[in-house]
Amino acid sequence: MNYNAHFGFKISPFSTSPDDKFYYNSPNHSKAITKLVHAAETRRGLAVLIGDIGTGKTTISRKLLDYFSSRDDYHASLLVILHSEITASWLLKRIAVQLGAKVETDTKIQIIQHVIQRLDALNKAGKKPIIMIDEANMLKDKEIMEEFRGLLNIQNNKGHMLCFLMFGMPELEVNLRLDPPLYERIGIKQILRPLNEESTKLYIEHRLNVAGKREPLFLDESINLIHNISKGKPRLINIMCDNALLEAFIEKKTFISTEIIQQTAEDLGFK
Image 1 (cartoon, rainbow, N blue to C red):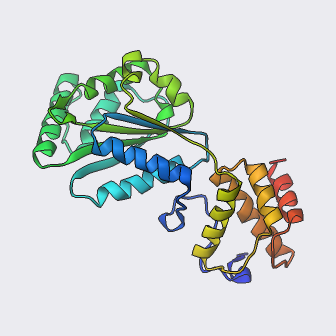
Image 2 (cartoon, helix red, strand yellow):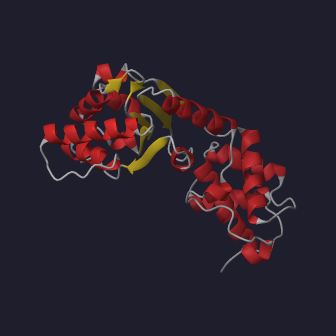
């Protein structure tokens, strides 16, 4: 069953997958992007975006990747950490590959030479190398932090030759403290906070508009309840709205009442 036709949507408005069409530039997200772009442009070396699960860190990382990739003066890549068993040697080699090096060795000194050669080539080509690391909180090894510190030592008269933008949950900050000298080198740190009540309302309306719905669909009281239950986290807002629309479709309703939100929250175990 699909509720899109019932409500007149062109596309589903509340998918939890990152989709640039639905990006809502809340004040918090706008501030985070501005700071991270500034870190890259001014070669700050290391910038960190910290936020709880579901606050939009991955969305911002994809938005920044699109931005940097559209510019001729950047060489940007995104590395997503999938588990916590990553070793320092694997990460160092992966960074070299992200920079465009062809690495056929596992010897640390040779890998670092590849990194330096690529950074030098990119610098001569007028490009700023940016490596964004999503789910960086999965990096929990002190040796890994020491490798980052070593790479940040590679500088020229313009500043750091390589910039890392890290995205992660609050424990990322704890992990960075495993190497105090690295923690002291954080050039910019931003906390990504949940949406407030007004931003939650605008966020929901924005996604509905992109999906093709212009008329009001969620009652103001329903949006307030969604905000209170989701604590303003975009991912939870999406899940609640998606399930509420399905519930309304099943009940043949044309708007989303507080009763539907309450039922949805109970079904999802959010209350």
